[in-house]
Length: 283
Image 1 (cartoon, rainbow, N blue to C red):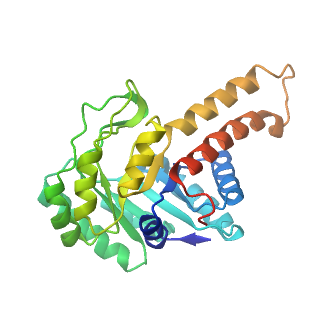
Image 2 (cartoon, rainbow, N blue to C red):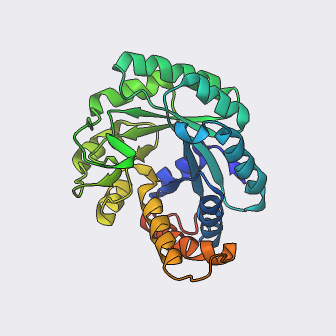
């Protein structure tokens, strides 16, 4: 069933687990994520980036998700991730996204507040939830990355930001980055504890792929209720593709033969992430 983020993430926040959020742009990702989440009775967040919506991407993604979500019993959130274009956010809401993230992390505090408020006021008319970012999680989803561009969230700004914007969830920067890490990250749990004591909304961890499991679990114990994951899925798909390419001699293998290793690798990663964040049997 398709729902917005608020109920799903509040339940996680209150019960001490997190909801896995997977970038999902193609049918093979969508089917494997949803089938695996249903099997494990886990709520799930399906995410798309601005680049994924170019051309007919908006129509394909929303049509796929809305077309199958009602066939699943688990809560499913369709979430726009890291959007900076407010007009695109409005289009996504019109097309059926149930949750959006406005990313004003490159702006000044006041500009971030002002733009986020505009998004929240619009989204609430459609029962769509809003995530925002305070501080800056550096890196790039599609490249090898490090943490040099990241700017840790200032706990002193959190309460004012949340109160003024009325966001439903807050992405915080505590030492992760987007993409594939060059070196192992080290999360600043003490900063997270300060933020969690102040925040009146659930917190989000971006850059979950490649972050050591013990650190992710520690972050969840201290307020993280949504964990974004993408790079690990891409790696699993690549490994499955290599397996397929090296195991078939015929030039016309059947689709299920082509995709099976990819799906199996993806499923293993998705199961691991569901168990890591503690969302199994929370659907």
